[in-house]
Length: 461
Image 1 (tube, rainbow, N blue to C red):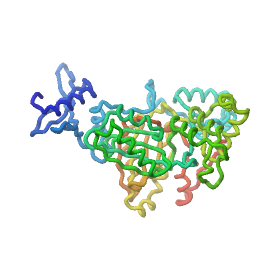
Image 2: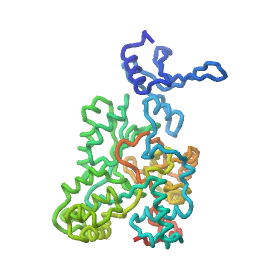
Image 3: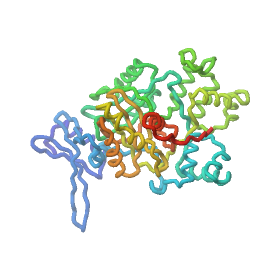
Image 4: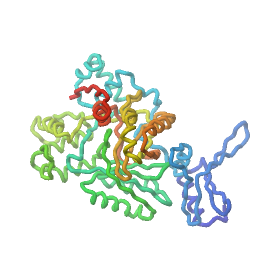
């Protein structure tokens, strides 16, 4: 459109570069305003047809305003926004042949995945006894599972025991959203950010899970990130909320674990029952085990001793000391390929605590419900404080499951929910595993507050 303002055409050109043809982006002037459409051409029955899909409008100042998607997930609209930015839904899944259906484990594989999720260092005889197979058969099964799900072995570390707090930073870009590459450039250099996600279809465009020693530290960290020269030109609204994990965990980035070595290693005892600043210290060998386990939690202890020049047996001794203190909660696994299509972030706000507590039993039961997939019902759940409520991350294998899950959650009274699609994982990763729900906080609450019979617990160590 030759008579469109220069800033409008510049924005259209930028959108075209970010989403090159096909499809082709065009603008149409309607009642004095400029609207962006995605035109696709088909050739059905040898007849040329053009299909147009509305994406948003461009203001005279050159700002691209995406069409409103509403509070609920509207998948087609959300995907249109994603396509308009040249984004795609990105998960830590490798592009390989196979479908979610082919990745459904049988009963024996499910048991093995659960055992390795609870203790990746469990012995073959222990696993064989639990699943009723011979040691050789179990070993072959594990090798097959490692290849099938592209399993990595990682450490579940309780960073709060070193005096760190956990926060979620939610960002809304008011007029224009930065490219993923711009966000990644700013965030990746900050090791206190453990997970960064772009979102679509709701109130926020960026979510960051961070660790910090104090509220002041997280505020300074947020200013540092948002005042970066790359992001400072964008109009931004920021919300910071404490985050208390109540189901699963976020794996720590290796870059952050390195900081523990720089600042946390001192000669002295590891922990006592009473946590004080002086006692929040790590021995060098204890840090070495954490560092190596964060990269490979089934690493051989002898290899760790040799790598760091420790006396024989020091790494193994430190491992058991870390387990005893619960700084290292467990050696676990995460699947890089689980069949998950995408992730939905569910923001649950409490509107009436009395109603919530009197009706939340079905919700708690749904969280710990067993699944037929390789992973648990949820990847991560945590309590948030602004507004007071919870944040749940739902792995989606089938689109129809989303509406069913939301309907199930809404049976709980006294809550309001909003949902967004995770469009990209910029930094960090989720843990894809099959956690034993008998050890979950939700199971404890059901037993203590609602009289549900406790799930049987297996000792995995």
